[in-house]
Length: 231
Length: 195
Image 1 (cartoon, chains in turn green, cyan):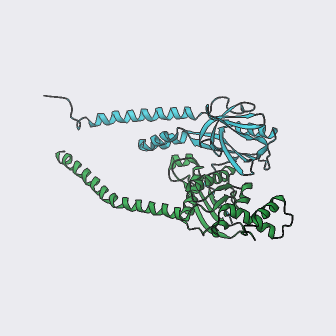
Image 2: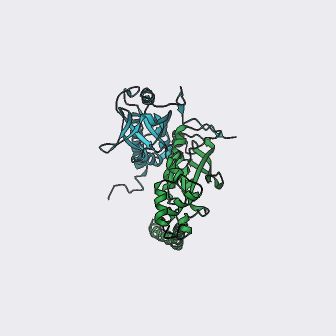
Image 3: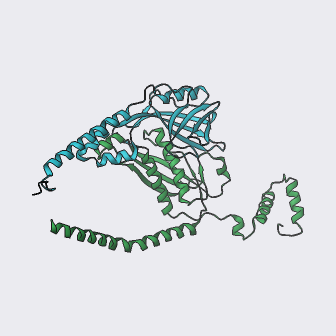
């Protein structure tokens, strides 16, 4: 008994020391990694916007609640990444006015229904598993990022928790990936102010053959002609 | 001269006492969970035309996930109100589809799950076998004013889902896919794969 009383604090101290020795070198590395990740995100900037399309069940017999949960969780998780300027819903009419828009398409590839009760009773069975193909496309249908992502719930939580895990995994993969540069707005390319750019776009639309120029365009021409900038 | 037993001498009796205490504790937990798991009387089919106590699983903007509140039909809108907070309304005309489902869940939440895990001799698993409750899920698809597609999921007491769906359909909600049998979520391990 005396031996164990002496040994126990020694073992405890050794365990604490070893744990500290293992963790301490990793902490600065983790901080540096987090900083570089943040810098990466800042440098790319939130230029693209994304529209989340409805979840395509493919040939899989998937519960409607799962489809909706995946869709809503994707919207939430993509918003929290701050990778995109805007996260739009499927069918949103505002999407037509967004210049650099990506469309996120999600197709279910595999689904294993689980049971929370079975998980609670057996621990090893009853897992809910989801496997989806996720594609980021441009408006013209060009796929710029494609990945297959899993989302499971094995121990604690309800079955719908798999959709939350899935959406988080999809968002993380998109966050870690490198997207192509979004096209800059024209006024930034020409180093012009937005007012001049607006006037230029009006003038361009007129010069493209839009002969039904209204009073506004006429006034603009009169006002801008002495400047010579638009001619 | 001190006859009081040392801790090592007390072991058989102490173990017996601890065993009996644990057994009593497990029995009491088991009975309490069985009682909790029973549906409240009269819950089935009592939904129509009344306010229902439901759990908002996800989807409504401005309402946290898994929030419990009152769901009711107010004129031409489905209204969810959490406590004294502001109510969120969905116009019934904007509802594109309604789906019903069934599922069961373990009662007691996280604390109960931890207690089940910590229970010795696999007692937690036995408790888990009896401490589950069936409920209905109501999934709504609706559009916002910009045409954006939304979904919301509610968890209702068993039997209330069908009544609420009937009431919504009677008030003008669109249902493009009529399902006679509510879909069961907890189908055992039947793996689906797209070809």
